Amino acid sequence: MAVDSLSLIFCFLSGGTGFVSVNDWCLALEKGTDLKLPWRLLRPKLAEADPHSGLVKYATTFQEDTSVKEEDVTVAEVLYRNKSSLESIFRILDKDNSGYISMDEFSQACELLGEWQIEIPQQQMIEMAKSMDMNKDGKIDLNEFLETFRIVNQECPDVEEDEED
Image (cartoon, rainbow, N blue to C red; front, side, top):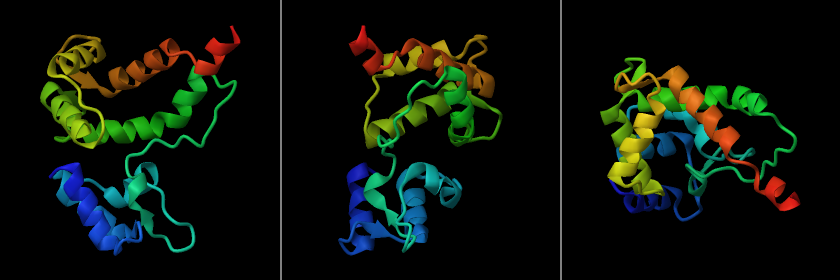
């Protein structure tokens, strides 16, 4: 199911208000992604909810929270704070619960991202997966996954730091 279809489902369920119940949000995501995941548990990491009504603001689904500004934070602190999120993402990608993300599972995740926001060319997806597979066994384990984010975080300097130089 395409993102446009999922947006239409959310819009219909919300009656045009922009908010849906947690249950409806979970059901729509399960149908729209064909992933049997604990959406209710993942909701705080994937979408905002109104603190008073508890309804999910569906437009925030899969949107990065840009309101949080981190200053003078080390890579270790960022990884420590995000480790549970990264582990959750890893478990989502590891569809067969083998403890590894296979190249097929990685490819399916990239295709799903393409439906939502970012289309990743096949060759680039293969190169990304290979670079994450540090021991070259054809699979990405949790440590390789976490290490990739540590390396990327170190190699991507903050834009504000560049402007000060």
